[in-house]
Image (cartoon, rainbow, N blue to C red; front, side, top):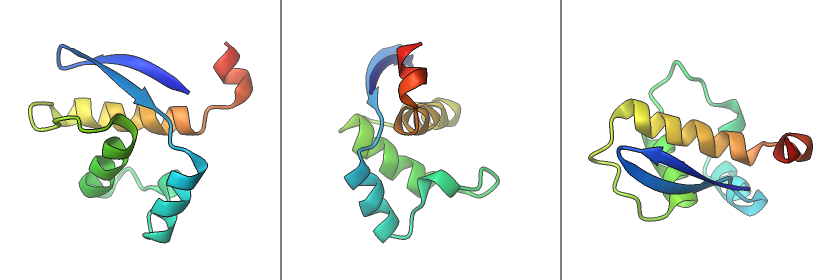
Length: 86
């Protein structure tokens, strides 16, 4: 599933992770479905966004915008077929 979102004045194409991408992250010890939002996850967030959004320059974005992109990637990754149709 893909979606275009507007962040920092730009339109950015965001997609969910594939099964293989999730598996590769898991082999690195990163379980995106079980991340604790109270922990510092900046490195994981950046890694996931780089996979899903390509070579996006995150430096000019606010932390809230970066985490918003991350939440969208996670939402698209775990989106059910029913949710996708609605």
